[in-house]
Length: 298
Ligand SMILES: O=C(O)CCC(=O)C(=O)O
Image 1 (cartoon, protein in one colour):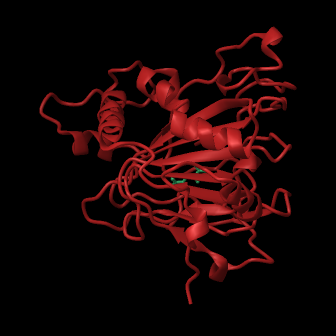
Image 2 (tube, rainbow, N blue to C red; image 1 turned 120 degrees about the vertical axis):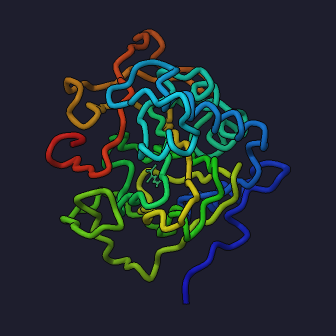
């Protein structure tokens, strides 16, 4: 029988409690339904269209659309954009949404920094992302890495929702990866799941406005969007404890460094504020086929 998500995974409307904090520690994820209002979601959706029209700044690969093109024609061309907050004040503001920072301060640290955003469009027919741990890409190593996955559209089995393996973050190591050549995923490799298996995977179906919080070591993936005409847009932001340094070279696109300082404080104090911040990350379009092992995105 397929595993299901129990009631403890859901953040109550009244706010996060100690029970959810313990659940997050043990299971590696939490879900908040209705954390963003329909108005806020409409603003994010409209902003996504402006970004992919090229109206928020130049991004290599964005094609200026014909005047008659509608939103779905514009969005259908793209899989995702990385670092949209670099060009969009709306996305930048969403990084520090109080509904997000409240959960981060309870689960991660009173002091939290953000280092990445990704805006997934996932048009009908587009592939998902293979099993992975975000910590593989963003090396915090202190186990504080957390993603806030904001459902702009309803996400379900048909349009390629997230899948997770609850509790798989606990071992806290980076799993081996093996080649993948199927067509569900846009990646050319995937994580070894053992001692887990596909039978432990749980779909995370959520309505628009929900946020799924998950630990950087948690095994997760998404499948292809098999719907005929439904997008599955999601804004995913990544955060960590501001106490830890971040030796992140962005898949080889930056010089190796002990502490990547292109960060945005979203809560509390930055103990490294004396270092200042840098503008290093450049927004880029995600390719449909991604191979991080053989250097970045191709
Ligand atoms: O939204 C998706 O399809 C995958 C997102 C994901 O795996 C991530 O943000 O790490």
